[in-house]
Amino acid sequence: MKIGIVCYPTFGGSGVVATELGKALAGNGHQVHFITYSQPARLDFFSENLYYHEVSVSNYPLFDHSPYEAVLASKLVDVVRFEKLDILHVHYAIPHASAAFMAKQILATYGIHIPVVTTLHGTDITLIGKDVTFKPVVTFSINQSDGVTAVSDDLRKATYEHFDIHKQIKVIPNFIDLNRFSLKKKDHFKKAIAPNDEVILVHTSNFRKVKRATDVVKVFKKVNDVLPSKLLMVGDGPDRSNCEQLSRELEIGNDVRFLGKQEAIEEILSVADLFLMPSHSESFGLAALEAMACKVPVISSNTGGLPELNVNGVTGFLSDVGDVEEMAKNAIYILEDRERLSQFKENALAHAKNFELSKILPIYEEYYREVLEANLV
Ligand code: GMT
Image 1 (tube, protein in one colour):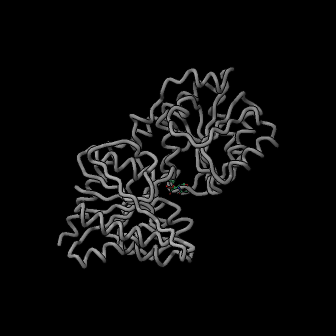
Image 2 (cartoon, helix red, strand yellow):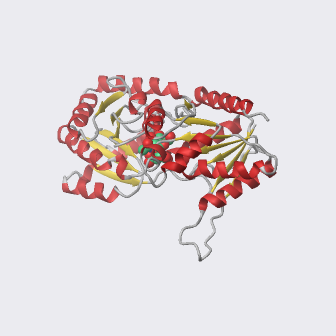
Image 3 (tube, helix red, strand yellow):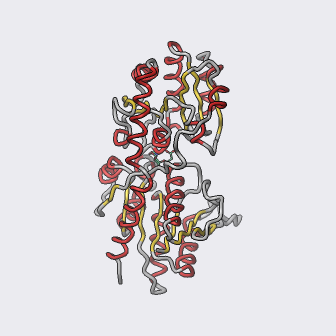
């Protein structure tokens, strides 16, 4: 198949999923065309089946805000026509689904009928999408998509709850490439971070408010009071300085390292004993799956799709959003006993295997075929 993929080319989860999916599809012999405003973060190499089309955003002085949706739609028309794509797969509803709808209408005037699959990732539904400023467009463009997928059952339910959707939504969970995300031998790094064999806790995110990264610091403080431990904070974003400030105030600054944005997440996860994800909202929690694949158990909130990923008492523990007391208690329970810790680590990997790329990729391929067949003209 010739597949067009539209996504945010950033470090965010939806961009990562879209890019990894495109790479895997290309590996399976499909021709994959990425259409984004800059090179996706994990697409910095050459492959004969992968193409990248840049959407250049105009800076014409009349525009206070560039009309990205219009240039994206024009680019989609161009790529579909001249590369003869079979299907468009857009990740994140805003504004990709509506841009694809517009492109589809324009293409119809050329006698080209291209099906559009929209994958909902989370905040496009649960946070920003349901805001009145976007809601009519999001509702319309989901209903106009030829196929709709959501990354968890919870997100599917939330979509039906918040929007008037009359389309079937198929749940296709996110996936993990176990060749990349697996426990690596990183003894030197471990020694440098925890010279006295302290346990290592890790948090990775974009430090947006929704991640509640300051709860990570609060949980760690309680763990650090009873267990020799270190915390690695990976990523960057609006809440990072609040976390830095809080760790100074709590006098744990020497045990907390802020590593900023990192590419080789799997190497950092390879030295970790526990992953913390206290998010306010999380449709899936890809970062937690990456941790589990590297044998790291997870302490998370019980919001959104997290209970579908983190099995309470098996791969880690779930608590109510903001319950730092219970999160710390559970973290200590896992970490204080090396044998127990090692059982949780095994369980985390065993469950991560259910989301292996090789299991999820055929589901997407089959879904494309179904949508194509249903839309034959
Ligand atoms: O969580 C973020 O800040 C990024 C966001 C995105 O849209 O890129 O992630 C969402 O999509 C990921 C991939 O499907 C999911 O793993 C995340 O749980 C989801 N984030 C939220 O729902 C807050």
